[in-house]
Amino acid sequence: MSDSTGPTEYDALLLDMDGVLVEPTPGPVLDSAVSATFEAFDVDDPDPEAYEVLRSLSAATPQTVDRVGRTYDVDTETLWRMRERIAADRQIATLDEGGKRVYDDVVTLRSVEVAVGVVSNNQQRTVDAIVSRNGLDSQFDAWSGLDPTVEGLRRAKPAPCYIEAMLDELDAETALFVGDSLSDIHAAQLAGIDSALLCRNGDSPETAEIEPTYDLTSLSELAELMHPESQH
Image 1 (tube, rainbow, N blue to C red):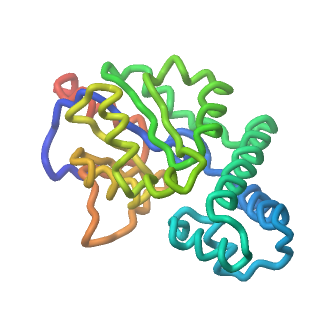
Image 2: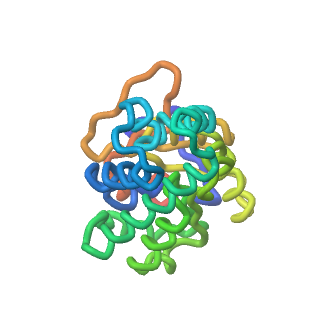
């Protein structure tokens, strides 16, 4: 665990969902959702670049989605709403089949004494389903996913919009945000809060531009960060 600032007393803990609280969505599930989205608009063989825009949020922006829509003569908002609806449907079905399981170390969060919020780039419907089906509503004070709109996409991490909204909802000022991607770390930085990069396999991505406040390999390490005084 690296610490560039020393122990801080946080008034809230914010966490990403996929890869942090639950297993990432299996690739074939996302592939089927993207294929079904194109099929809904009678596109049988989308070009690879267009496919990747609907497949990955790292490639999806309002501009790139608009470009796909213009390529296939589909309204941008209609296209993205369809993508989000089908992606949520497929992921919820995966949940019901036993997929996207909660990680064992999530139990650690029960000992956290400050407000706990979830800020995910997954759809709000998917986040709601994960929380309710796993009984996590008793562990979290609030949770948010993306609105299934182009505006929701624009506000997605690394934009700080949803993190800032969660800070307001929890009335927090010195929160720690835990994510598993550099996009999460960037969003936390833009929101002006500390961050922890969770790398469950122990391999942290290296970059000179975006550096987390802490590196974690398990949520169990949060006990020391959230309650530093109890460790002495």
